[in-house]
Length: 500
Ligand SMILES: *Cc1c(COP(=O)(O)O)cnc(C)c1O
Image (tube, rainbow, N blue to C red; front, side, top):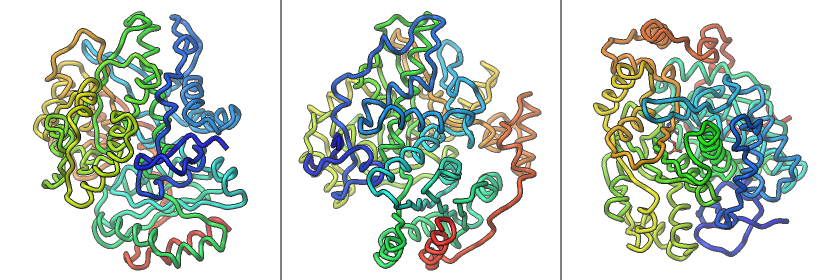
């Protein structure tokens, strides 16, 4: 057993990547990290830097994953990579890199649900079912996720029909958009279930948490050979697939003759839970020439303040924005950066996280902050700035961009170029947020979600992604609404039915 992972809060009890993926969170509440990242294992010469190299996105995925999940055999990695990316993305390049004015944008939204979470959530289930077979042979895993909209659908699409797994998604009744609801309730697959929960997103989330902490539910599931798990963005199996597109993007720029073999590239990353941008940092630590990584926040700008002051303070108002997937007060994956930048000081990380839990804030020593500031910059864009960026991309470049991408575009536009090529991570299709995009372009959107998609298509003379257009005629499979208190019974019934 290759015990390459341990908690950010303690180096004792190391586990394999497979165990880390199955468990999600370490038992002490920390996040799993691997020190292999620090040995710069990436071989740049194997990445295919010649202009017409045939080394593909899938090859890059194999090269990046091998050192990060070393207890997976080459065949296992290969099967997971093919399952995740062969025939599942609408663009043959998986993540195309296209011009964005004088800069570039990385189009992370060509997966089945049209947002960047597909890159990770197409891979995680495949890694998880192999982890299960190795760590707990004969057992099955049931994934439970409460969602405010986007993550639930990406998780459903990833886990659908993956052997030895099933997935239950809970969403707040009446609190997600029509299109988001249809994306979920029409999800095909023999191992999926979706229910609306009466109440708000918090009620749905609390219901899920109650199921996770209910020992009697856990006991009965265990008797039936079923483990309960989540598809949380702190899972190692979600983080490692995200490193791949940074590597692939840099290679494309080298192949195109835009950067030299040792030349660094800057990335601008719309950020919420700090997962996507942390993957860029890991790419750098693996040996990729990465210049600066810019944290792009919406009005929930806790990370911007953190970088400026060294104090992370979650005691602030939560603001609802038009880039909802970045409305977050606690950026969980930041804990991993603190581990790496403190050179593995697990006691420091544990005490900072205790401060966060007890006081709602922590202050990082100046020497660690200095290290962080050597790589990271930060900028914010509120909703007005975001709308300006959407309008600007349309009028200047003829491109419709979604509100999350627009937060990044605004921060990039406001920052002084440093002489390096710059890449904006474009995290969702504008067709996922047609009403807010139309408003930013000066058009009052129709109330119906599909009509708004049509209006955006007419205005921009582009076509909606096929997976979204197909929802109009897709049969609804799930129409149940449950009380929050019945979530446990619902999950157990799903386990019996889906994992029979
Ligand atoms: C989740 C999400 C983000 C933020 O990613 P993090 O990894 O949480 O920082 C940005 N844009 C979109 C569209 C997302 O769904």
